[in-house]
Image 1 (cartoon, helix red, strand yellow):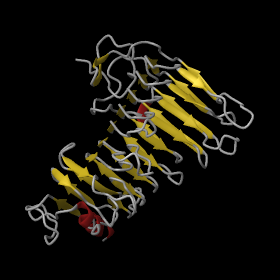
Image 2 (spheres, helix red, strand yellow):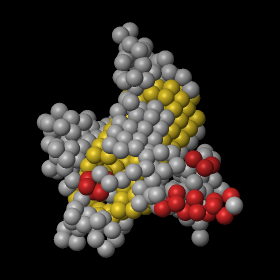
Image 3 (cartoon, helix red, strand yellow):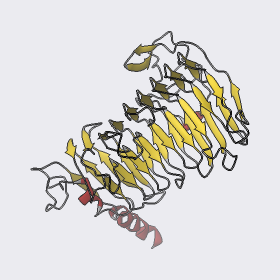
Length: 371
């Protein structure tokens, strides 16, 4: 009898997950049941219905999901095998407009303090503070375009595109377009303070501060920064800083491979981490930055300097973007086939092209397809 009952059990398990639909009014209404034909009107209301394994599909339109001064707040938790997914049905066609969030609570476009959430395919725009903030664990932020954060530089909040707090663990940021954030030269594309973070295949351009800042307020361990394109930042491409300069915190086991870091306002990569361990910077194209290519700075009460890191195979050559605003590679780019073989860590590029296409992995967010 067991073999007869098993399919029924599996069917019941599959049926336990639900899909809810959201569309702008007048098609959507929170009085509707949230079905394909009768969708809800707001993502926030749909999120009140979900459990682990459920999905919210959001149709094109502009959403202003403010919740007592918060932006869109993802506070529930899925599981490793059954995450909660919030997805735009069309790539970058559903916009979370955060311009109406208030400073008194959390001035974020999206705030995630639950775990095992996936937010996929949105535009997240014009937050007075951070575009998207993560404080939970094992969340995935993918395929989003995040821009215009830090709308008001006087608000006293971080105005970066993406911010992860020091309590975050195991969060993943893949194939996002993080651009034009911050207004004062301080705010960054990514501002990351958690552990076990993965930052892969992102295009990070024209942010007012650094492209990526890693800050070890409570120490940072095991961060993987692979195959990103970081360009035209107001200051550095990547900065790694222990935050407590007396050596009380460190950055350990940071792996920074296969990135293009070009045309930024000061250094390509810099930082200070005299007590860290296991850090590796390999096979990056670093070119055209206004300051030093790689600069390990003096810090601490006694000016102890440097950074405990191994640096190999830096390419100091023009990456040859297709255009100044199109970060695909030209056929003669030195980034082609020049990356480390990262295997299943980077199976595709920003566009979904399978890696590698030629004799090796390309450097940066885009793999040049081979006919």
